[in-house]
Length: 462
Image 1 (cartoon, one colour):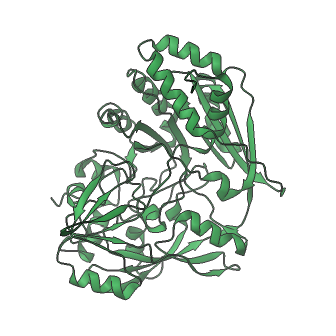
Image 2: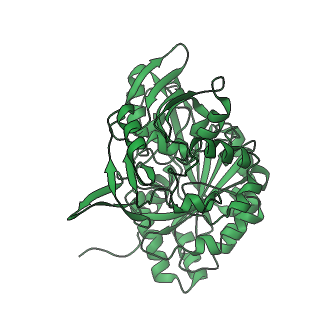
Image 3: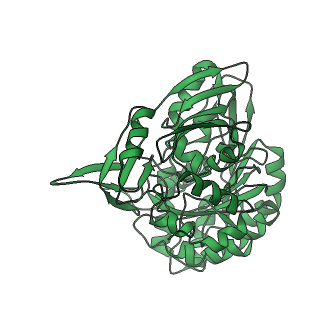
């Protein structure tokens, strides 16, 4: 008979090994299946929250097919990648366009430290294709199943006080415009288009190819330990400054957080302890289910299970440690606040979350360096990113109604791929180049063919 009791060893190993790598989930390609007899396709995102019935799903093999589609499509066109955006960036009644056939590294220039890559390449595929050239990406997000175009277009990031988001390493772009033309842009050719296109939400056309800054391949050593949150928070800025990558996950109603550091490792040996992160999440949920009505007892029980847990270490290639695969589905909201406000904001987020006894998903806290893309949440601002989650089959609206005001209080800018309810007026105040982006977008797409209802509202074009 399957045991349902919470075992100390399983909880600790899960908390240290699984929570170390970050909360994400195994991504699936956005599913688009025929719905006979009508010529339409049903699409759902990974969590199941966003969905639509589109007129068609197109999977072009090259730029000429994309250009022809954009010239001929009668209704809106939206690109779809891995389906891991929680905000409604994709849903449309028009045409869905997937870039799965535009995948792979085109060329590398080891001397220049660059790689030219097709936009439909998944991040995990990109890492594996760069590795034989002894090259890699400077940083990676928690999840690496996203397409390169989707990750860049939404401002996807990892953690590291001196490390920017993925789009900051984009050096050049090829875009098929909504009229079917092709434009190449970088800091010299069409610099305003380049500044707008690096985080564009898919509004300027279809990105088909990117040239990226890459670095020599490197190994990392990861260290994870559990520490009372009241002791960890004062140390967080110092840990972020001292280590290449630093982040933590607060475990609700336990009083503890999993602190995680990554540093360069010059050895070649590999050590990867078994991951039990799914067990960890199930254990946190069981604590909630069993003791949710008694938060102090829940905290006491968790502390007894966690107290005295030894640190855990892992050593491997950077891309094997920085990103992880997860099975448990969830919905997520994330905002990026000025770095100096990060600790105060996460304290208030934790206090607000713990007013709700049903919460059990960890709170994620990361550091990101500033960049200069116009719609980057990190535009000219070193930031701390704070993410809150809810199980896919449970209520999630409180992530906006309860946590949203906290994010706003501290000047938070939303992650474009995560749930948020910021208005066009609010966004115009948060992004200094909002008007400039709007002008570039209108110039590229005066009829709004690349917009869906969510984006029309976002840009005040509804």
